[in-house]
Image (cartoon, rainbow, N blue to C red):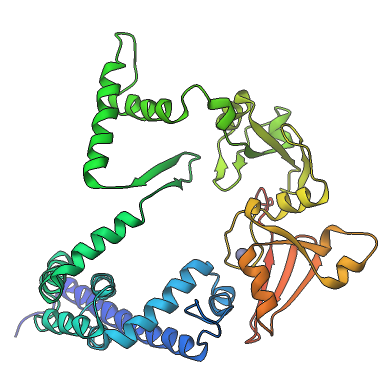
Length: 383
Ligand SMILES: [Zn+2]
């Protein structure tokens, strides 16, 4: 009889946990699809009834974007990839393989998607995720050789330049374009970076490439096109009492040193908070203050619908009909809402919103889930 070592037991336990996890993931996908079924689209041009992702996002503390994606993906998987979902439920494959199947067969016809999943699943999980993915791509190209070409063209139609903010106050500028164009553009930047090298230039090649791109795009017009940045500084840091971090709107916390660097540039607007993170003052450094609306925008910072991250500059200051009839306007009668969520309250019934304090909102969803939402403080209150 073979002796069971503790290691063998541990590995068996890890495997068993993985199997259970896959089972419950499959169950959740089935329930997400059921939710989509309960809330079919009620006007043309939409995939889910208004307010559905919001109803899930509020109790789950999830962003509306993620909730939408998960509901729509689940609906798609249940309808088009039944064998793959069953394989996840039975512990044959994991969620990564399920997601790969979803992504690679997304643009195929229903019949072609079924053919691909059947062919790949007939060999089980394959030795690795990469192998599974390659098998999927091979089968997809076999059933619809033109799909890959269609996809490439589609991607070109979606060419764009976007910014990706990172947590340390830096950001990436990402451009999607033809592979050949991207290579040529990169070669030009590389060439300029090499040319810019002087004996006393301490910048690396990579740094010179980034600087060359900025020089090309912004040219001599930097002052004119530079965006205003909102930076929040605790009063105690501002008067030099300590080195508490500041905060860059839409980026998050930044170091005291970065606050000082940005302040030297002189293009930022300073927001001052007390030591509990409440907003004290909006300095009209570059732009005239819009009074109340501006204060609400600074207080709320994003759309107040739970899970929505649409930044304040794209939101409207919203008030209830009753409050708007009042002669004296109070901060607590107002909140920021993005366009989508202003429309959602017009189009759907059953949501109740109360605002007992200026920065505290209570949402009751149509399924009676209660979610309290406090506007994000500019600083964590001291414990
Ligand atoms: Zn919103």
